[in-house]
Every structure is written in structure tokens, then in C-alpha cells.
Image (tube, rainbow, N blue to C red; front, side, top):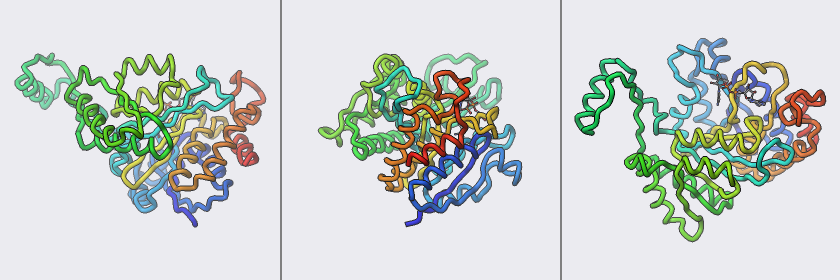
Amino acid sequence: MVHKITLIPGDGIGPEVTKAATRCIEATGVKIEWEEVIAGLSAQEKTGEVLPENVLKSIKKNKVALKGPIITPIGEGFRSVNVAIRHALDLYACVRPVKYYEGVKSHYKDIDLVIIRESSEDLYAGIEFEEGAPETKSLIAQIEKYSKKKIRPDSGISIKPISKYASERIAEFAFEYAIKFNRKKVTAVTKANIMKFTDGLFLKTARQVAKKYAGRIIFEEALVDNMAMQLVQKPRNFDVLLLPNLYGDIISDLCAGLAGGLGVAPGANIGRDIAVFEAVHGSAPKYKGLNKVNPTAMILSGVLMLRHIKEDRAAERLENAVRQVIATGEAVTYDLKPNPNDPTAVGTKEMADAIIHQL
Ligand code: NAD
């Protein structure tokens, strides 16, 4: 069977790391027909548009995409092309596995958890009112009237909508994910003791969904500030973390740091029937074209993609090849060497070559 998959090479280091990833994926023997489209700065330079129509069209048609990091040029009508893609395709679940691989510089050797972050609403919904604007003043007046609380007149306002609908579907997603990948526990992370009507609703909904999985998946609750401390002290205690958008963003980066940094952190944005796989890191423009950065995060995003398209055997082989190359510590990029100036560090392409050789 040939899988048709949308490929967005991206900006900055994007083309280098996606090339490394597609070569490794193809080396597993899985047959893929890539449909390449461009978005972001490179698309603007070539077509005048940052998000050409064919990008969403292609992803909607193929249902699966592998995406490099993209840069949103300022003043192009989009605050972020990445967020625009997620919204347009309703990719409401951001999935970030956090796992230690032997040989990676990390404070922890037994971390293996998955972050499931709701990514359609919360403070990131983009509903903001600028300080001093007439509508902001009128909004402040309305809020003061209904809440009977004072807001300083020189305030900016960001709105935090959290719905029952979105909380329910992300909680369902987290539990189904736990079942599918043999995980034992889901921990809902909120600040429900303070934000009772938003985080409180998220938590209440998660509790209801958890009841359906009782006896199969353990459910726990934590406050986000306490979670930050616990993760630093004993990350091994956690399995699947379920979070609203903002906390999910922050805790994801914290966990990426715990497990060895951006060079090895894969991710996926998943909706009802569409999934886009991409590394957590950005386009690191200063390294563009230098054949220097670590392709692992993108290759591991490819591993997640292979599992998604039910090519489990290929996914396992590719992950093992990555694991072995990192553990051996020879054909790895500068960031995986004990000293980043180590002259034996290899380039992006050469690390991919070593992984393919291992396969
Ligand atoms: P970044 O992740 O691009 O880079 C930060 C630093 O992390 C780099 O300077 C580098 O030292 C290190 N790093 C990142 N990827 C690495 C890799 N594969 N191997 C080794 N080291 C690596 O973050 P930034 O500088 O904040 O963002 C740069 C651009 O990327 C911005 O335009 C931002 O908007 C964009 N961005 C895009 C995405 C996305 O498309 N999903 C995500 C984050 C940032």
C-alpha cells in the first residue's frame, strides 16, 4: 500500500530536518508518496502568500502531514501560520511524548510520559483587547457591571474561554490514547482551585470522562504549579498528562527540557480525522543551511506518524535505529555530544545516514 502524505518542508532548518526525516522514513521500506506544499516565509517569498490555498487543501485530502517548522512573517495578516493551520483543520489535540533516550544529556534517566494539550481554546484563542482602545473601555465597563469588581482603566484584556465540548473531546482523546498505547494513568492538570468556571469546568468534565474508563485507566488530578515542582523532582511518577492550552504549552517545554532538549522532542497535532506531525522546535534561522542541527526531533515525529498510519513495525524499527545511534554517541550532532564544540560531531545529513545504516 502506498500512503499519500502532505509534506511541508518549512523554513530555516526545516528543509534539512524534514529531508533527513523523509529519508529515514523511506528507508524503513514503507511506501509513501509525498505531496510537497510550502507555507510560511518560504511560501511568501515564492508565491506572495504565507498560507497558500493548496496547503490546507492537500492536508484535508491526504489527512496526514509531516511538517517542518515555519516562520510567520510580521504583518502578513496572521499572528501565526501554525495556529492558523491548527484552527482551520480543527487540530484540537497537541500530543508530545517525552522520553529519555540513553546518551542524551538529561538530568533524568527514567522519564517516559506523554503530554496531551488541548489546543483550540483557552487564553490562546486569540481574543484580546488592547489597552486604551474604545472597545476595551466598553468591555471593562460591562465586566465591572456583571462581576462587581474593579478593573484598572489602563488594562489590556485577554479572554480565556474553556468549553465543556472542547474539554470533553480532549479528555476522551487522552483516555483513548492511554488505552491505545498501554498507558496506565491520566493526570488532569489545572488551576481549578482559582479559576473555577474555566479550569474548574475542564476538571469536572475530565472527572466525568474518567468514570467511563474506571478500572482500566487510573485518573489523578494536580494543580499546575505543584505539577511543575513534582515534574522536576520525580517525573517518573507521571504517565499521561492532560492539560488546557496555556499550561500544556509551558509544561511541554519544561518536559522537553527534562528529557534532553528541543533537538529530541517530537510532536503531533491531531483532529477528528486529520493529523499533522512536527518537531517541537522552531526554524532556528541562525543554523539554516549549515547541515548542523539535530534531525532527531523530526525523525521521531516521523515515528509518531508511522504509528498513526498503522505502520507499527516500521515505527518500532526506526525508533530503535535512532535509539542505537544516540546511545553509541558517535554519529550524532553537536548538541548530543558531551561538549558542543566536539570536532567529532556530525551534520544533520550524516546523522540521518547513520540511522539509515542502522536500519
Ligand atoms: P527555535 O526552536 O527555532 O530555536 C531555539 C534554539 O534551540 C536554537 O537556536 C538552537 O540552539 C536550538 N535548537 C532548535 N532546534 C534544534 C535542533 N533541531 N537541533 C539542535 N538545536 C536546536 O526557537 P526560536 O528561536 O524561538 O524560533 C525561531 C523561529 O521558529 C520563530 O520564527 C518561531 O516563530 C518559529 N517557530 C516555529 C514553530 C513551528 O513551526 N511549529 C515552533 C516554534 C518556533
